[in-house]
Image (cartoon, rainbow over all chains, first blue to last red; front, side, top):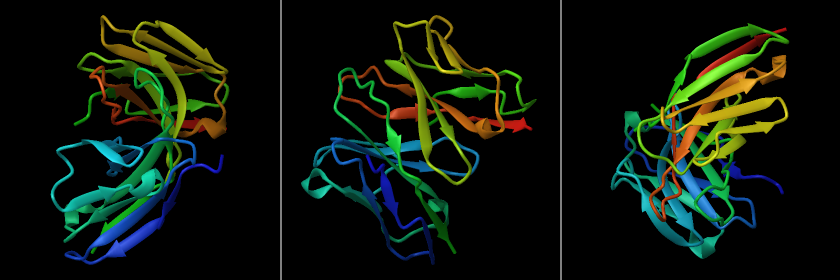
Length: 116
Length: 113
């Protein structure tokens, strides 16, 4: 169990640029989640995959955000035309399949995005 | 949107003392989980309690759940400096096919050696 890995750890970019983050979940985990966390707040859910299928999306995920999980392994989160308000920590988590949706989620250390 | 509200927002105690954090939530839940987050790091799962359970223990952690009051508490006994972190409660949705967690704003715990 090597844990959830996120890359890069930090990203600084100018407003209007596109950014892409990568998440490698724990290998045997079917479920993968993206959350966003701003300073002093708890994480907010963005989207969730089961294998390669994106099954749930938050209304926070505007049309500038897109997430993929090709082949049900790693996932990418892209933000187009970044805005100041996109500055946050982007967290990825994974969990195994389970019944009742009551599996603990295993988090990576996140990608901190700063928009200049 | 935030589902849970942790109380207090910040807590400072001496090493060896017990720390109690409370969480209130608004809608029905499938389960409630507690996570710890060290500064600049991801979240670490501590304990999960299902909606039909009232109390759960794990090492120095004790969690209670009162679904009638829509509240939970996390007790850390015999605290250590290494327990210094932010603690979040998170609720799982009872909606079929939904696996998202809804987090509170957290309690920042400082344990003074």
